[in-house]
Image 1 (cartoon, one colour):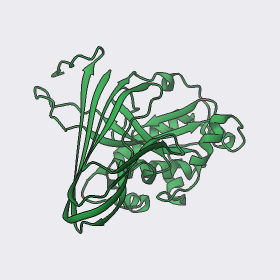
Image 2: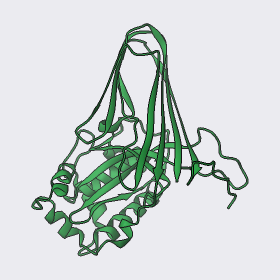
Image 3: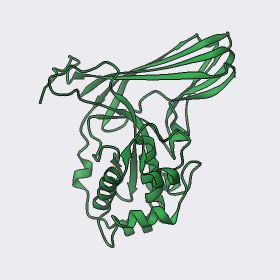
Length: 302
């Protein structure tokens, strides 16, 4: 499947901003099973300085500075990505989760060494007994790692309610765990906390999720969403992606943008401004399917 993705972020300030330094993490990664064919970033007002680099986790960042007074900042990322279904998770051996946890610190392969860093606490995620206790209901003795992971995903989806009004980007996993409500970022943080509390490695994945219109209704422009899910590491097999918000294994409807220890590593747009006062934020994402050959996909009512 080929997608044309537009991610538009608009900040409106009460007072003029005289100087703004920003970092954008809005270029999709190229990796199996999807490839980023092209990506561009349009910024208004035009920055006086703009540089790009790859961060520690391999994400592509754009640093830019705006020095003219402005009361509105618009950052629009346009990308085209080709995605193929990932079949590897359906063919995994039945490695017990305890063995995966025990192997992680002693496996000297490059893949495990890279994954090991995702087994520790991070700025937004702490290891807690309550997370371990909750996870152990799924991670029963000798249960295969993929099976236990999928069961934990299903339980979070069932036990937690999606509610965009009860949390913010600063809400901790502990608070979400008590309220049993939140958004995709919160559910990903909770699941990562559960996995790390069992000495397993898990990373936060940001990206896009294709949505489908109601039967008989046209696809709405901007109705798709920026999204977050979880990737857990199994030594000898690699990363296993799960989406606790929707209780699915990500496939060709998910596009990976970036990954890190938690949301703080992969925030789509962050920075510092001088002036501005109060501000409003509007984000619109459009994920248009172009079909397999670059032609618009017919809308199905099925």
